[in-house]
Length: 133
Image 1: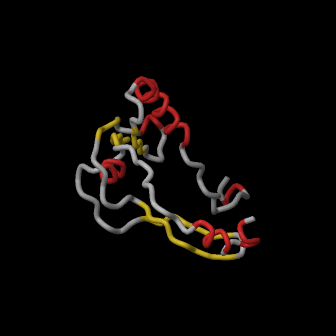
Image 2: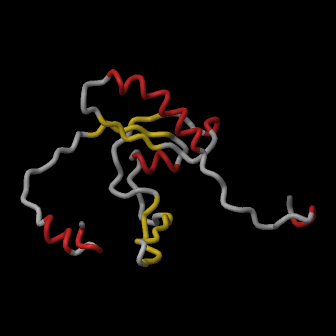
Image 3: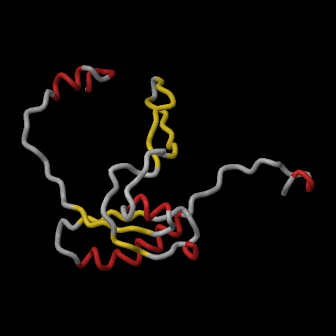
């Protein structure tokens, strides 16, 4: 309803199109389940209805994404974060560029592994409220 109908001129935040992402996950998941162990896929999906997605393309990762995280506040409960549009250019043909152009993108990634290093866990734990108990 608009102001002429007695409604608000300002609509609330639009709900993300989670169904679009879910549909694409259902498309690639059977392949991933059958893929070699430790296979990792990075799937990016436009926030749009599935009918507006141009298709699925393989793409390399851009050095920057379409949004970046900024800290908007800090209190006793933690950090307040927000996502803002990234104004840095992204290379053509990368996942971020294709995503902006309406394509879903998929990139196979190498698995990560833990590194065996000595961590100062006792020191870090002592700095937590309650001493990490």
